[in-house]
Length: 280
Ligand SMILES: C[S@@+](CC[C@H](N)C(=O)[O-])C[C@H]1O[C@@H](n2cnc3c(N)ncnc32)[C@H](O)[C@@H]1O
View 1 (tube, rainbow, N blue to C red):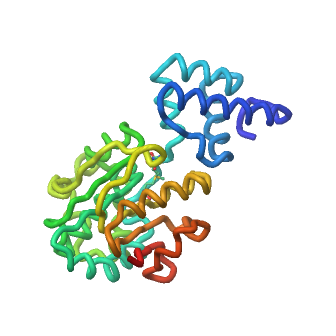
View 2: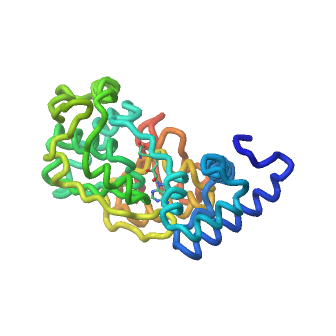
């Protein structure tokens, strides 16, 4: 166990976590009660340890009386790991199988739910530009965390990451050199401002906020993996309601629709890739 809370106190820890989550929901309106239990415990006990506290109850006291500390807890419960052209085969398949269908629409609306610091969104913007679709596209990029959305808007990426991203881009079927889409500075790069023109960044909580209407594509990768099955079902209902007829739903490589009764309403577009299409 990665904390100073002793092993024999485990059941108490579970009770304390339950109380903390109720209290946070009551006070701040953020509902983490349906996040995966093991994940919550790991992340919260890490914060207990890092802040020199003795228990989750002490953490609860601080969270309730100190809004800045609460923000820290939100950060703790949001894993922001992301990459440009993450899982390149996904982007390659999207280019090959989804793009031709998108060409049949006069306008294309794409929703990236849980966009983190924006690398996935800018990757899609580049892909749509290269496929001649960007000018008629509107991309909604949402996340629970306002802080991470600010860095997404800034579109600044540490220079050291670009080598890997260039490899990903090529594997994803990129048509140029990734360096055409950014300006390098001392130790970071700034992505081309033109990529941002048709992107709207907004805070949106998948637990409690409502649907986005008439999307041709919903992309939510590596987000629901942190949720219980019950919450995943709720989120999938939101996506189904947000998609237009025959719209596409894209999930992360470890995520599945298989336990959800609504799965029948979708077909898998490419074997091995988590790209699904509404049957009607
Ligand atoms: C691991 S990142 C995934 C980023 C990107 N989709 C990718 O695959 O590279 C997960 C993101 O989901 C966001 N998130 C977690 N819970 C959320 C919720 N309830 N509503 C919206 N976003 C949430 C986190 O803030 C985080 O930025």
